[in-house]
Length: 302
Image (cartoon, rainbow, N blue to C red; front, side, top):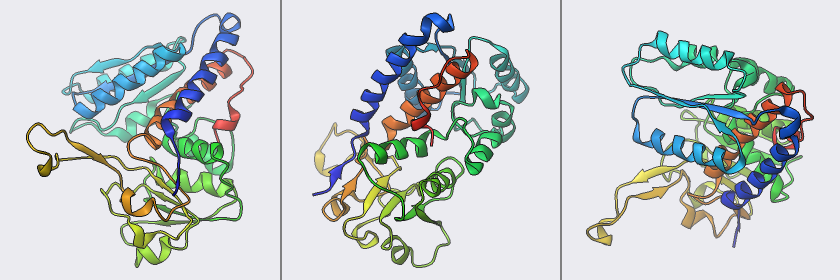
């Protein structure tokens, strides 16, 4: 039976560590860390995500400076909101919650965020820092995956890793982080021929394709480590009867893959909690830098 890579448990442990980091440096800093999550519109899933982030901030002692703008807010006003947060000395991290409403182009808005306050690690400068191996904020989801693998004692040097998905949000930075850990990395995508032949070579398989349950036992080498980044909401099971709740699943058919993998992340409870925690890590690390304090979190920012 595969080892279960429990993101909830590790996230809780890291929150305790962040609480300690903040408490030990609060007097010297003169203020707590500040995170601003900027939400535009009323996407229901975004509402849940933002609420979870705000609760996590409260648990560890990070002040929330977030804002919620109407869906019809003009691009110039969203840009002005970002610029105000850039200039606010109490704000150490800024996250623009995606997706944005129709008519808003995310690219110029993400580019407008101060790279030193880029809590999501998606600014072009910070992606370049990752490519060059320079310190800086890291993309939260792949950094969370790396923290999970390290906590489980999974050695990456010399291993063959395959990442399914090539998005800037997950796939591309994930591949760079695995390469930096001395894995030999291949990136698969929608035009990859004979996907299963490639993925069956992987000692470490990271699936971030955004397609529900696309990867099954036929894609996985026995003994591989499987990381499922996807999360999808499916309609209730008709067999469950009236009142049944919607179901969550990932990109991996867990019930098929778990018996043959050496380690696997569940959905929910695997990568998702780590994404929120690494957002906090980026924010607290920025606070330490901006307040001239030592930075004790470098091991979590590959």
